[in-house]
Length: 582
Image (cartoon, rainbow, N blue to C red):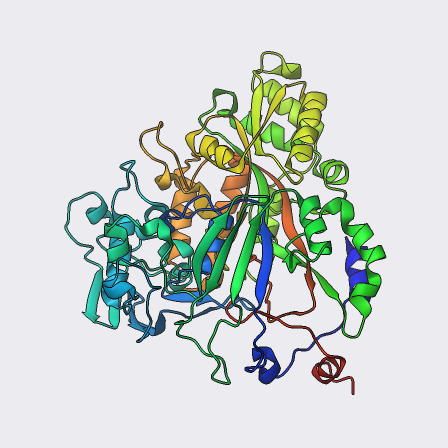
């Protein structure tokens, strides 16, 4: 992949930004502006506390906010509905000071249809709602991923042993505190998760939660189903933030988000000017785009700009630990050793990605200081078909004899079909076992995976924040429902190893980040040895956008904050001034 980055160095103009006057746009410019982009799939839920997929988080993240959010450039935590916070000396109590004057979007459920002011009671209501049992008598994603085992009293409230959550206290209308069971280095980072965004009691109690009423920079307008499904968000005229020049944010009048899982169609829409940016170029089209569009990247100002960066994400196959065929660890290890990831990448994704050899957590040592990638790598898997066949024989399946067929389920679209077919061919060749492929919609794939209806599932994970914890949480045994018929929303493999859990818990409460990440890596070693996954590759992105899209910050977790984004053509003089070319 180095040759692509070398070429990009020459064709992408160095753009150092422009002054705040230009960033904000012309206050006298009456032109209506819209920002258009595409997601591979529609949101899987409109209930904030249940969000566990990237697509829902992108859409709902423009509408709703939590106490804090991430800086889209650095991914550091910054204020949102809370302006500041402090921590007790022992790290167990966090006190947040809330922003005054923030209003929910207008809705008929509010008096006179006008959005009322946000306050501490909304925070308490949101976290209490997320801690209640849902319609399926299980915990919400917010509860299972965060509240359970973190905030004092959340579990007792969830189990209906208490009428309130003891660890959440309203001090006054604009101050609220959280008492933790154990100190947690990542506590504030987790509060930026969309599943902890604030909801209004009136909206929920009148069963209008899916009307999407939040406090964010954009408001839900409407959805259109054809010819290409999309949602339209409109500017919130009462948003509380202003730019450095006092201009009301957001700059955009609307945001249009299309849903289309065909990357070739996405690229066509972009080239026809129907999209302002796309998050990834189809692997088969990268060379063509670079060669045929070089003039578009090198003008002054250029028409487009292209960037290539590593992502804080991992693609993998999740193995159902309840599948009789996969209960023997030697079988799971054999599947890992038998898979030639380099061949898969060459044949199925045109050499686009780097095969995974460092375990589940992507090898980004600057982002995860102290994480022992070398130790994990020693216990990860490279192509070794001889070892794979030995393990299958030890498990009682010499030459694959007597081994049942496996079912691999994947969501159709993009490259997943080709990758699955390559996996099927390799397992047949190396282990003489049969893999049945089943392509599903994204929604059905998630449902079957969480219910354990199948053996192997194509999945991926994007970090929620800068910590190995966000990856390893998906294998924490205490998140598995006791009833096997219930969906396992977080730990979909139903992997359960007390040694892994103990290290994971110890890492969570360690106060030093490097020591914490070292413990997480020890858990990562155990995970690789137990092999509940087949790690495929680590993510990277080829983002292409029109150059008139300004202030769009891209990052390693594909977090999109459109508050300051605007669309405005450059004059030559403005461009020269911004890049200091005069």
